[in-house]
Image (cartoon, rainbow, N blue to C red; front, side, top):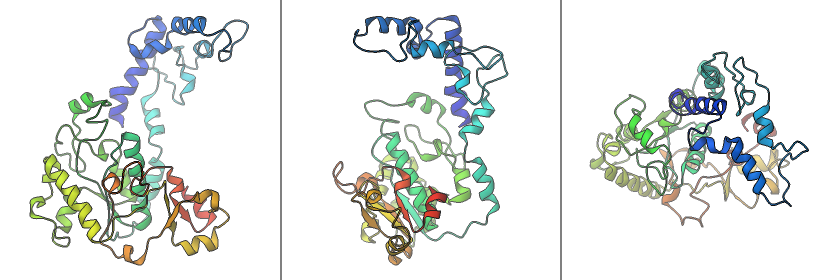
Length: 352
């Protein structure tokens, strides 16, 4: 996260501040902030369309933001520093990096508390595959799978390193070149990562997450359960699935088939389902006022049965099962707070 701040956000916001101070357009990012452009657009706007905050002195909303008083000694221009909780006392910087980092790492206080608690010994694993959509869909799925691992007390297994849609391939890509240049080493042992692939350790602090939820990689999972799950010899040692894209694809197919064989491919996609915790009976008896028809919204209740509790792993195949754009069961998208129905209002308030 600190790398992202230094590499992308701070240079851009400092560049904006300098460009606005000199009233010059230095890149395509500044065109929307150019006062002349705003005024030009306003002049050509249809006369029957009322501009935002139009008043007698002909000021637009952007004009007023630009003229807003600064809270820093430097007197920065729009986007003004009062919109940030971290104005800088350093004349060379618009914002204070350490303050921003602290605000972005909002979970830090929770990590400190979690480190003081004794973590229960996990039983079994949650395996999953990344969503086939773009970053926002991938993120939503990951939040769901991490939540299930936390709720069930299982170890979360990251999928193999593969190319992500709209990150590493697709019609457009976001930050592809810079990401390849950086080629961040792989978690947890900082080994070199193959270029052109992604995984969740690039965007999430897995060391902090590991305080509350045990997290391991696919290679580690293969080494641990090679014999117990009769994993094919072509994946022996585990590392091959991150080194060879073809092997990664073959492993994902094997994992889906193994989960089908063991009846642990779970159709719990939030758009068409919800998890009743700890059981549907407990939810209906104790929290019906909250978990009403409006909350359920025609979704199916799913339960963590004794069969699933005793399974070596439970699996979420994402786009690799069901019919895309039709089947809501195997894409784990949606608001995370609506994924689980707890058996008490107190738990709803604590966990949501």
